[in-house]
Amino acid sequence: MQKSREENYFVKVNPSLLFDKDINWKSKYSPWLYACLKLDYNIYLQRKYNKTISIKYSELAELLNTRRETLSKVSKDLVEHKLLTKAGKNNNYNIEDDSVLGDSDGKNFVQIYNNFFIRLLEAGISTRQLKIYYYLIYITFHLQPDKGFIKSDETQTSIVKNLNSRGEEVKAAIEGLINLGLVKKNRKGELSVREQAGDIEVIDTPLISNAPKEEAVPAVEKTYEQQIEELRRQYNVSYKNPREQELIKKQIRELTDKKNNKHVKMVYCFDDDVE
Image (cartoon, rainbow, N blue to C red; front, top):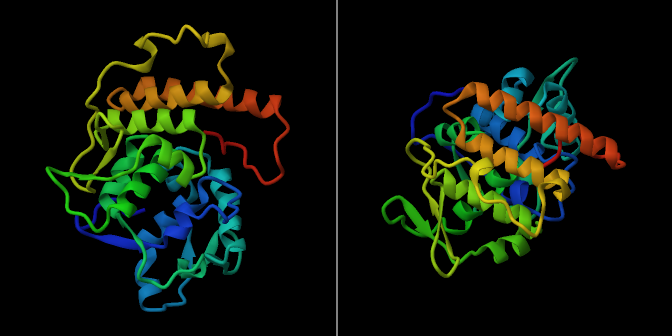
């Protein structure tokens, strides 16, 4: 994925790709892999070039913090949703326009800016955090930012409902976004989202591991999902320490394996599709 473009370069993404509850993705990475591909190859869609692309799985896996094998399976998911068409052998495809999803009229879209999107990925934010961030960007599209932030009427509760997510997971994701300076919350619980510009820096330095533990939920009783989410949040705030990040990633892998071994996985789930 090209990491250095003009700062104002963006693509228009069909909101159904990111937020439609009726689309049964086989992986949480599917919409984000497509977003990466569209950022790189949008000119083919605009000019209707039927040109074959080769997906750089290893490079994109590192950027999306997953495995190469997972993205290889994700590409098949995109084929099933008619966003990619197989072209020959190996990892060669033709990219299709995402207007095929939902009830798109081409006028309703989410702007994803290339350089800022890559900064988000490099900061290590989870797919759930990406979804919440771009949902807030989408619903405030018509509003002007004030000092770099756009105020919304959304709260944690409304996001849980609108994105069909669990409250505890949304709460943790929002806290991580606040920690990275991407979201603000006022006393009423209303959320403001940062516009897609500038660098990303942690504004709340203490690690989650140093925070007071909830007495009502001992650590030994926390679910694998809760432990994984906490580790993701620690990952977010340790971006200046690559060694620590590698250790955290290893812990996430181990917990994911334990969870997958403990529970019977649905046939449509991929190995590291856990948040």
